[in-house]
Image 1 (spheres, rainbow, N blue to C red):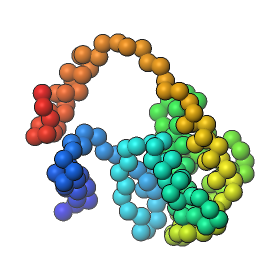
Image 2 (spheres, rainbow, N blue to C red):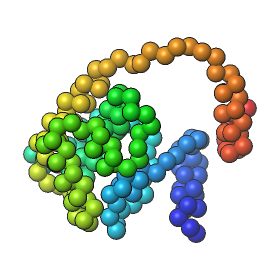
Image 3 (tube, rainbow, N blue to C red):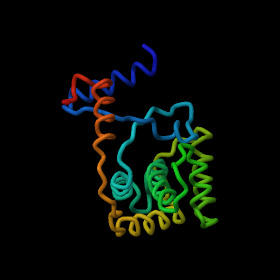
Length: 178
């Protein structure tokens, strides 16, 4: 079975076991972001800021932290900054994202070093916290969590809803109700 088929099979298993219908999945993590190593797995992600806050709280507190988790908290925070600054569609490649939105030279250097270590094959297990990245993340997570939800203008989306429903039924007919 090819990799694409294995991933689809796993997604179908999750749908059945959890009683959900996955309507969109995308590759994430080190492979999609451009710093995979020979032992990198395949990741699927779908929640941004909420996931970053949880990972920050669970893995990046104290003097010794899970170093790899910095990358998984940085990605959504940097994506939020990209969107907030109006740069358009967030790039998949982590290095492009970091280069454009990290303004502080010390933070940028610390992130680049972490990426270099990951790409070289170093397993980023537990290690001493990185003060520059930790401070940056704390500041941005605090700030982003205080922002009000964006105001949206109510418009009719009936035509788009119809097209979306047709696509869903065509793709996932067995778990979508018309």
